[in-house]
Amino acid sequence: MDSDPSISPRRRSCYSDSGDSSCSEPFSDCGSDDSLSTSSALNPAAAASIHRLLLSCAADASPTTLTTLIATLTTPTAPLDALRRAAMELRLLAKHNPDNRVRIASSGAIPPLTALLAHPDPLLQEHAVTALLNLALCDANKALLLDAGAVRPLVRALKAAASPAARENAACALLRLAQLDGAAAAAVGRAGAVPLLVNLLEAGGPRGKKDAATALYAICGGARENRLRAVQAGAVRPLLDLMADPESGMVDKAAYVLHSLVGLAEGRAAAVEEGGVPVLVEMVEVGTSRQKEIATLSLLQICDDNAVYRTMVAREGAIPPLVALSQSSSARPKLKTKAESLIEMLRQPRSASMRARPAAMVAAE
Image 1: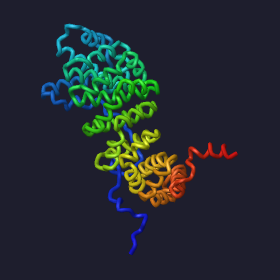
Image 2: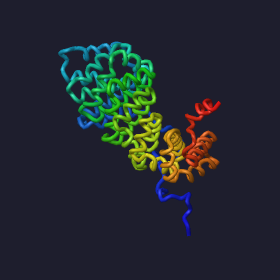
Image 3: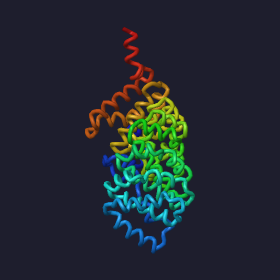
Image 4: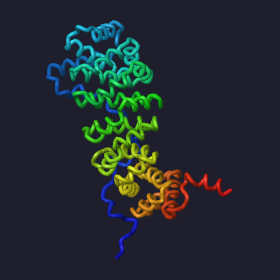
């Protein structure tokens, strides 16, 4: 008996970052200050001391305390232990208390913390970069960080910090700054962050990969030139690898970043060349509702102005799952319309693209 053409051999596992098909946001907050308690540099006595500090730092920071801590950071002869302690206390004071974040920044802590990113001591560097990340959680502080010239030092920390936690937190801090506006995102890209984030996406640990994807999504969404930088840095291949691996826990994040990249002609070409069509078609077929939607939108962009790509997508078996999606009672009306548009393209691969139609109609008139 002939097999049902709507059931592909691909139907082997369901994609989900969380183990279900819920429609929570694909990008949760970037990993924040969660590395201190697990640092390999901590002995039991130090861990107990930090626990006491965490309790005390949950309270509001007094002006006297902040003045003393910042003075320590700006004293050229301050011993290393004193610098570590002061940076760590500022880090912890900014960890959970929004009011403290404002107080610390307005007290002038950002410039000396930024300067510490170049310090050779790995633990001091980690305290400083994480303190800046915690300060960047406050929208009012983002412009202050940019004005203080924090972007390039954070990019250098992302590239060369000794500890993985410092590199990951540098990525998160850059993400926060890029969220300010398009100009900030462009500045982060110009400073060289994009290739480093792509490297972290490829070679980082689980948290590093998630932080890199989240940062790339914000940075590329804020500035077109950053999308081109990401494509040129080779982001498409690791994104597709993550999308094809449900065990990565990164399917949704990678799919959303890829969608931002295929908005460029260079991104579409890279996605096709790197084998993205089968990955996207499989996602339409077996993904969660959100994954089906983002995959459909990405395929629509890939197919919109290229007949060769449309033929490839059709031959990959995209039409049956798209028909099922267009007829699904649970799909949003807008998504059904997109699926129907893509089906029409695939059935008539040499017809004018959606982008070209208005110009062609005008020319005909």
